[in-house]
Length: 195
Image 1 (cartoon, rainbow, N blue to C red):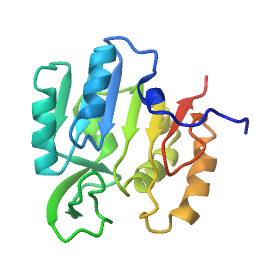
Image 2 (cartoon, rainbow, N blue to C red; image 1 turned 120 degrees about the vertical axis):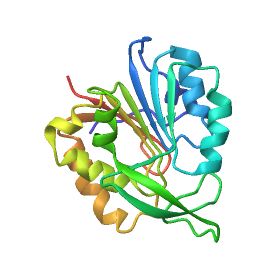
Image 3 (cartoon, rainbow, N blue to C red; image 1 turned 90 degrees about the horizontal axis):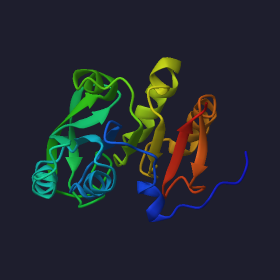
Image 4 (cartoon, helix red, strand yellow; image 1 turned 30 degrees about the horizontal axis):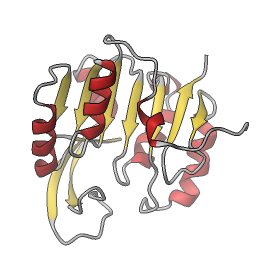
């Protein structure tokens, strides 16, 4: 694999998008990335944040952006209720915090179908441990994975078995996408659909 640029924060917003482009924000937290993408591209954004307090903060941040739809839901490979440990931007199923909130997790593909999203130009996945199950689901289906033009993802060490699971996900992802920036999987990476 050829060398790719290292991650910089500016790369997270740098995509050739139009107002008709579709962006999905999985793990919207307080809404800042969706806000920056909206300000820069005025694209259609579907943002998902399952933790009530962060969803409410994101609602305030995104209030004046009618191109952004914010949902109080989480994403995964299967629909279920889970306990999330609330720990600021490390909140998730595998965090060690004592404050726990039950959250609703929905199958990502079903959620996108219900929103009418057939193709997503950029999907940001920062879901504090749910990323492996999402990517295993997507890479197992050659049609599903091709619904995403760019996959911006942050992997987390807290994922059970990640050191064993990541190489298989990486191998399968290379069949349809190419790494365009971010050599360190535990910071950020971007994978672009091959032409």
